[in-house]
Image 1 (cartoon, helix red, strand yellow):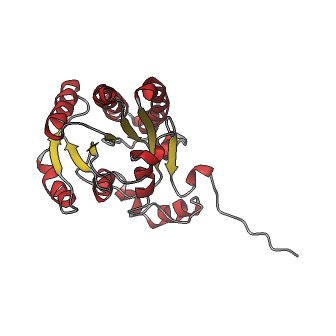
Image 2 (cartoon, rainbow, N blue to C red):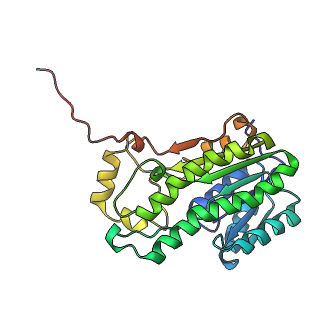
Image 3 (tube, rainbow, N blue to C red):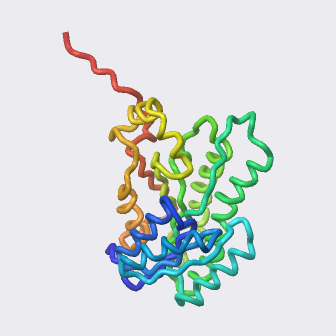
Length: 260
């Protein structure tokens, strides 16, 4: 049920980090992968990495803040591979600032990328999927879909919006055989947040709040991704799947009370 042989996947923001990891996971399961980034040069090595796993892979330039770029790229992927079975809507960005320091353009950058971009990429891919009465759309969110953090106002707004958008699209497109779900990672070290992991005290504080006792590691998202991308999830849609070690339960440092 988790086999993706003969499936075609489109992964946005696939040049590094979680996006590249998603592309590799799909390739290992048998899918061929179209990989996008704003810069084609940044995709050269990632494409080779995916091809080394035995999959067909190709690179495409995509700016999710540009509607024409979205239309052109989806058309180019379909022209190259013939169809799109799976969309991993991963491209995103963040501006980390105290709320009183957020600028108008900061807000637009984050929301245009993380929310408007997610919608219009999904829309363009779904136009094609509807003609085949089949599709798996996976919008990438984060634990900020359900939790708020200081300094992440625009980002949290965009991810909370992604959760709500996912439910709406699931209703819109369910009759067309398209499932739409949100995969929401917890705290994983990426280029966007690696500076925080250089602070030993912060990492210790973080781990105290994660029931499983550690941040996310490579491979922790693989099972959830394959579930949502495959026919194993054929009756799952409109859901947000948190892969966060349990941090969303709002855990605090446990106090052990010894019996007298």
